[in-house]
Image (cartoon, rainbow, N blue to C red; front, side, top):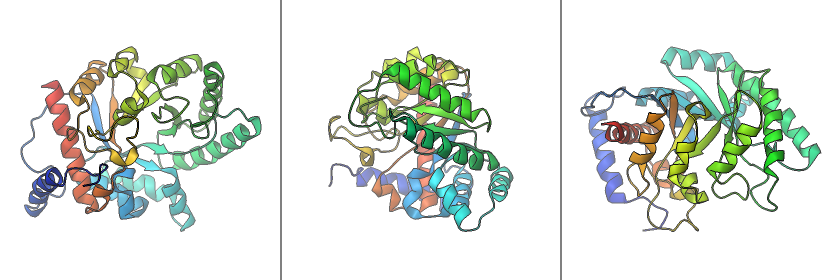
Length: 316
């Protein structure tokens, strides 16, 4: 078995459990009994998890809703493709509302962080276009990762904070908040402390950070670092897990697996997030080809089942 593949035995076992629920005619509810517990989380599907099934924007929203998610995290390029194919953004907002699902965030890539002033100006114009589009579908946030600065020189963190502040100022006109995203493989913003510093020093009241189980591991941050973040600074958190092999130095995005299937301290993480006592969206973000081979609805249901089980265990 390839090192970046999930255990086929575990996958088959989990798939059969979800498949049984589908065969019993439960397409809109989780299979099996679920202990109801009070918590501060919403469950979201990042569409990376089912992106190779090529459902299109509307299909992804429908799948997330049918699987039982509260929310969805879309990709900007998927929204753009929908528009290019003649889609009406107002229909997207209505579809989500009709299905009772919120659009919490969009994954986008602009070079807002780089030293080159002309590139930053282009990035801000790009963000304006994207935020205007996202506002029409009712999307609340957009990711702001260190795109364009993942290799090369280490940037001055104070400069990064100022640049993030400018991005936040732009967002004030659209109501779509950029979340400062940590990328564990990046030269810049690969540590929790770095994103927290830049968010704090941006001076903007809506500054917030987007962290991730996998990226915490990949970047080398202690999971205890989450204790230093206030509840309001973490509005969303990317959920996934990782195996023991390959090691941190060579692990990559494709090695991510479902929460509870790996060695990450998921219970510790969720306890810490729960203790913040503020609303937090847990968004499942996976890039694993084994899940891409599955039926999209089955994969989505498997994901929410794993997330809910992890939450129940953490706060029992």
